Length: 271
Image (tube, rainbow, N blue to C red):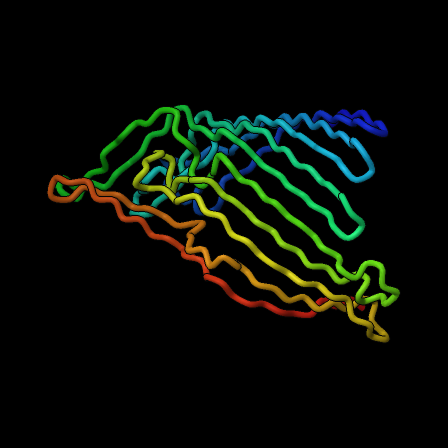
């Protein structure tokens, strides 16, 4: 359900909806005694947009996403020893997203956005393998962050059109783009354990796009750039595994490191 009000300077909208997702096939194979329930999401979003001038605009969105029976990994194993997802009765995501666009000069435009969120599971039950006793230990956590859900994400982007006044069609649309992205700290599982987390990171990409003239083609562009221009060492994802052995708790973290500085080039065509 969506309600909206449009104006020349100010506009607002309200969105409310319900979505339901059935478990995956792997979830249904958990075992006859632990068949998962479908996930259900109740979503509400309020958006305000303000256009101050022809070159300056802002938009802000607040949202609340409330889940019942969200499926998450808990460390629990099924009757054949496979790790499966289990329902948590309640969880939620709440936050605010703000973005702005500014076109101060004919050959420059700037954009920025930031998302601040709180992503929580009120009660989470963790299962840890105990190799000494041949059982799984149960640990109950309260008010923990949902895994892979950073509280802060932001992006700054700038576009430069250095030859916008030229009569040459290709050069007139030549663009230099720089985008800088920041992703805050996040966790590998739902325990909010500092020893099972991913560090915050920021990266920058520089891209050049130049339209080319070619008969018989609708458009043809050359794109070239430098990814991760600051050569940041970071890992945006991974997984973790904990167990008890010889009376001690051991945690093993595994990461997916990303490439450092690299060059890319390509052609984009449409006929």
